[in-house]
Length: 304
Image 1 (cartoon, rainbow, N blue to C red):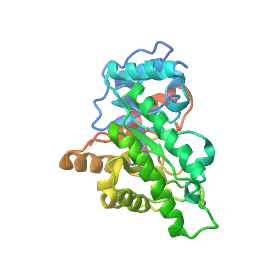
Image 2: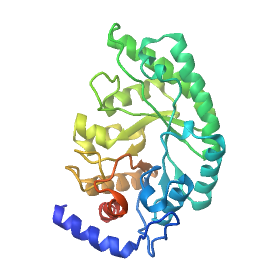
Image 3: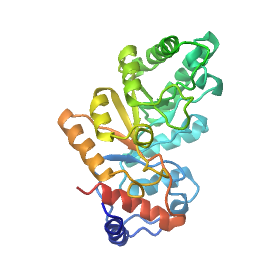
């Protein structure tokens, strides 16, 4: 979509949505009915809804979004986790990912195969089961971490598979799914592409181990987004969004998210699968106006 066309659509959508924004933010008069389950996160609409996480969730629901994600959920107080889970259920929002987050050391050490790091990972998976129960969650993000440069790549891969199998054994009885996220942040990361994650999922061979296809990272590492989605489709459990460059809302970079969203929607319908698409990005403009523009960007990209 041309930039001037995108901005024109944005202006029209802003008027139609009628978002006022405040700690007691007014609901849009006629929210867009999104085709896919896009999932904002805490902080994304703080200027419009205020600092209270529960008010922010209410604002997301009023704006028409069908899902929510929260990377830091495991670190939130138990009482707040329960309140957030109850509110999501009441407002009909699907809970997306949170990060399986324990001692930071295991994140960079699963490739080593050392029992102490493996044990921390498995225990954190057990803790995640309780968080998932309180928040009605199904998916949890897992990142294998960094290469262990002193070991051959095949040995590192075997160690990661062993760890993931043990984690899957914890999650599968509860119908929970760890989703492996390939990243582009630096070249020392062990898992960088969807095809590598595909191979790990096939080796683990569990419904509790799937791929988190963060399209921002795929674009930075490889491009060819739609082809990578098709190749890894059977093992993808979750998507995340961010335009390149800048990691902001759709329409701000080089990625044609309108076509990508249409492809995911059509393929999901054909295979009778449903996905949450996490909005793991920032806003290109500050303040309430930037938050309105972010919503309008999704309205424009979701219209096809």
